[in-house]
Amino acid sequence: MRQQRRKRIVWIILAIIIAALLLTGLLYNRPLPVREWVGKGVTPSPTPTQPASPTPTPAPTPSHMPPPTYTPSPPPTYTPSPSPKPVIPTPQPAMTFEDVDFVGADRYSSLTDLRASFLDARAKLMAQVAFRLDKAITLDDFTSALAVFDGSIEYAYGTMSGSDDLCVLVSFRYTPGTRIAHAYKTGQYDILSDAESRVLNAALECLQTLGSEELWPEHPLLIERKIHDYLCANMRYFDDKTNNSGTALRDYQTAIGAFDDKRGNCMAYADAFLMLARMAGFECDTIIGEAKNENGEWIGHAWNMIRIDEQWLMCDVTYDDLDSPPFTRGYAYFNIDELTIKPDHRWAPEAMYRPVASESSERYGFGNSEFPDLKTATSESGFRTNLESALSAAYTRDAWFMLEGFSVTIERIQEWMQDWDWSKPGGWLMIHQELGANQYWTFHIMD
Image 1 (cartoon, rainbow, N blue to C red):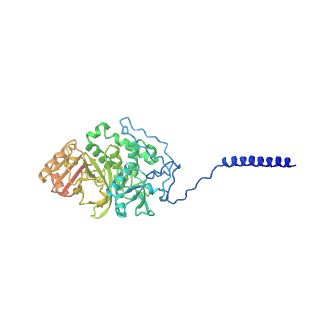
Image 2: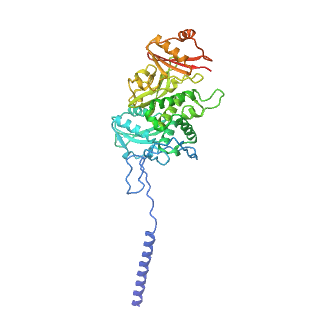
């Protein structure tokens, strides 16, 4: 009896051990629950062993339209720069303020360093940047530093618990001209929309008229002038969203309108000039400020800064497009310095982030030896003699003069013409520009 009881106890113990082993195996093979991150404003690392990135990864804002199927191929005489191509981040959803790990974000206490970081972001076409600002940089300082961007800007800011730092997330949008030039220089054509790809093709056709690409660095002024003249010849100024028939214009403030509709406002001129100049190898930017119109009123305006040799100069194609059939151009605003343009152009100090020359040599613009058709006159008698010679030449179709320190009226020129023994079919279209102490005259033969 006692022996049977012992056997029963042994069996019970064995059954308990077996059950425990089975139960333990099931538990160890059961998947563990995923840990949920609930920390506000902190993005967890993908794996426990991977450290957080020191700054949020900037990502381009995704396009709302499907990727274009078009793959541009430059003409035989054009190849993108052989320099190493920067890596464009794979498009991904834009970050929100709550997504950013500001603990590891870059921190700035110098406004100079902040501006330099913005220039770097702009050069790389970053869609977003996140950073922290020491209290030495005020919110006004920060917004003034954003003047380096010529597109739309959005930003969100707040404070971090336990810190006086200002946490900022900035989102950028770039003009079509900026994006097209960047795609051409890097070979990353897939970032372009269908409209931008179409304009890229038109821009490549324009670049073919500049001559062999190998000669561009040797004759920068001639290349820049051809870009300037191309826009003056092919664009009309139009500051409205519709044309005369009521049809909506396409992007009339950008390079898309400049090439698709052949018209646009000052932003379209500046964006188109920037695009072509950068594609031709120039350093070029846009400045936004104000300028005087024909009534002497200050109105919003945009023009360009371009680097020629070691000089940053200003070029306002809008004001050089005299906009009179047959699309006459001037050169009063071609590569001028800061002092020369100030009487009728102004801008906020923080918008001038390039070291534009306060005074420049005439070799960069009007009167340059590479421009034999651009003539300078220092006296009325000299102007009259040179003008008669230029307009009487059989080959002359256009003539440009700069009058240094004096001016003449159109009535005076018409009086001279009555005494000259020459005639041209249709006569001459005469237009003048005033810039500082100088007067500029453009003469174009009328068919």
